[in-house]
Length: 311
Image 1 (cartoon, helix red, strand yellow):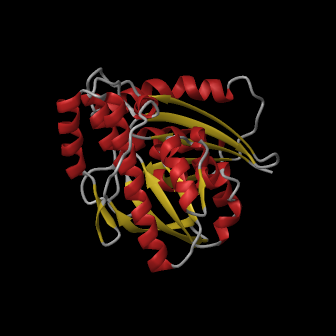
Image 2 (tube, rainbow, N blue to C red; image 1 turned 90 degrees about the vertical axis):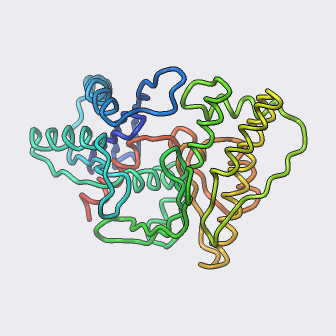
Image 3 (tube, helix red, strand yellow; image 1 turned 30 degrees about the horizontal axis):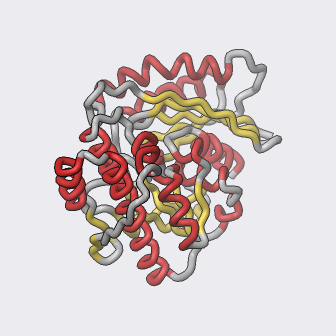
């Protein structure tokens, strides 16, 4: 039995989670970083400041009234598990985790934000069996649009190799930029989805790919013109999401042709969108993180910490 604390301080969310291996239960808490009205993002220095202010109340809520022994602590210390991957915001979670580890005299483990996303998807989709098999994972968010070949690893639990990616704009960036253009509050995904569901017209989009990689910035210009000419928020929202879905779908098809019919797992905040998820699930034999595990969270980090502690 082991109870593992996981911490993730990503670009837009402060989160902590507790994984209890005896019951397989995850308790996860998170809070978005505040972004000023009309802004399309946040500076790293501001992100660090807000994480410092938000992590203590979250940790108190998660652990304060519980008589639980912590056996290990794990934190995401970088965006991706590759050399040179770095963002200052992750230092907050890493420092807090290492402090808790030292205070409790328990092991500290580190992982990446991306690996945490993938593990959270496996857990919430009921596909933990894939830990011992190769599969393709899509990590699609405001900061990332990548397809990853995931293979078992004794050290990392899940080893990630990028096999396709955006060559310019991330999918979440496209959604947020168009949303802010239309006056929506950042992050715009949920509001954009609600608007898109109101549109009943026909939509035809053609994704732009270079081999398995994608381009998204060109369509941003088209969407901007579309909104300037029509002011039709539901239509523009629907076209935005349709283009993202068509792009991810085309990338998936090419990757399955190249790597064979491997299982496909979709993770990241963009994959919590019901329109995108429903269309992709009809086309592919795939698994999706539940919405609460799609957006940035520390659940996967805590679970990875458990496997590292027993491995």
